[in-house]
Image (tube, rainbow, N blue to C red; front, side, top):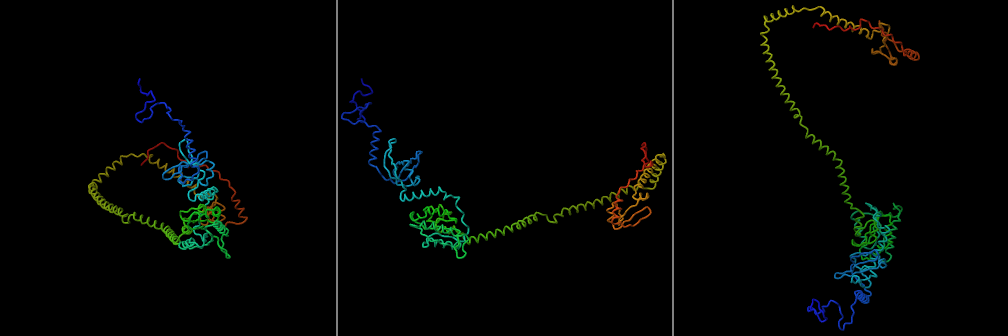
Length: 515
């Protein structure tokens, strides 16, 4: 019975000629057993390691990462291929530089495979930066160590003097660097320059540069007396461009420490703009070239003169500005103030209007008075006046006046007048003179009421009932006794009873008064 599956070993797939069975079976004459993945991976590993036991590769680092275990993983690549790399922890710890992406290196080691991912890789045993790799590695290592000590910290940088009197230059006396510096200083601001000649390349150059820096620092501040050289206010460490080997003296630790310990601010001008040394990190200021160092050291003299002139002009403007503003405000206020004739214009117009109204009013009033006079002329005739007088006499004759209506108001008024007169007599200032008292007057005729005031007067007048008497105040002990006696209080006279006649009249019943 035929079915969908072949039932004999002789059945073949007609498409590729391969056996079409589901179960793997050995074939006649086949004595090779199938290999496991692990077995083939081990065979490949041994083959690769035997063939490439030690290789040296050059490539660019990519994908650099350090695992928590300390192992370093990366990729080495060029423009056409990429190879994985690994550096074990013990080897990675001995690296003299920090691997980063983009650095071209030369790695030495052996090629091996990683069966877990079917990849091949290089186990790096030694790695240097390609082309001067060892030198750069040492440079980076020294830089990190000195940076960790704080020699490159920004807070250690000191400001440069604005206008140094003396500038010290540490450089070769025979090169073009010193000529460039002196020429630039002469152009910008001529200054006194002290040159300490040193070697700037080769064996012993670093020691000479460090000794020059310490020599300038050892000078006494404020020198220059008795033939002694003055201490510089600013130092310039300069050298022309060159390779890293030529500039290596300025990467030495002894030079870096001398710059960092210098009490005088230092400008580093080593190499060209693209060259960087450890001296640049330790200096207070880095200049791209020696000529630029001279430009940084001093300002331009004519620019300073222009700045001073500008400041003087601004000062004069500031002084004159309040006057100018005051003048402008005064002119603005004067422009807003009205003219005198404009102030009096309304008043003059009002005066003219009132004058015209007064003229018309007087004319109208005279006209109305004339009309009233003409109207009253008929009422002022003699017969009319006689008739009105007769009528008034008749009304007067008909009025009956009671005597008591006239006599009582007169009596009340007379009694009030008498009481006021008696009170005025009692309150008269000379009334006490009738009873034996005297009035003391000063030279001006004014009453004196205090003994102290009387003693200050050169002459006094005593006014009695019948006349006056001029006296002179006594002085000395007699005066003090007299003053004491006068100061003694006198008994006040007993109050007199008021006369019954001075009492006001009791209110009476309201009566009609004669008007």
